[in-house]
Length: 130
Image 1: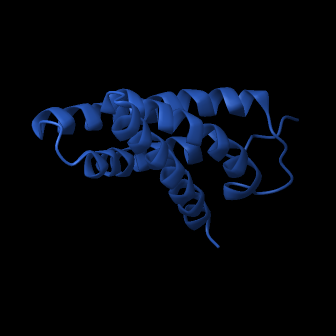
Image 2 (image 1 turned 60 degrees about the vertical axis):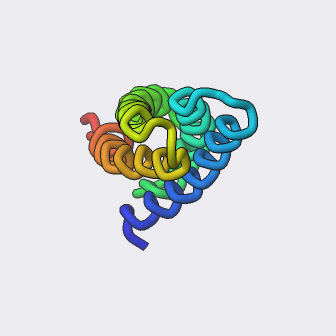
């Protein structure tokens, strides 16, 4: 299985959890859609980091690392910013209609930012020091 396919698999499972949380918070508790998207994303991203670290980008024995976790947090923040921007813009443009479709569009748009930054920044092969 390729790195991209492993990343996609983990991300899709994370997005299902993410969207379920966000949709439930919005429709069940009346949390604003942008905030519900942020909460769902944050919870799912935490779990995704561990799985990406140990499976998606595994090129050899890797343990969890505070440095990579910090980088992943920065990547997650950038990804979240893209997602919340998409959700907020679509929510405003569609006057609150189609919340699940809006959440899915935000997740889809932010996927590519997350993959590129994860692959080339967080989980890039570390250079060996002499």
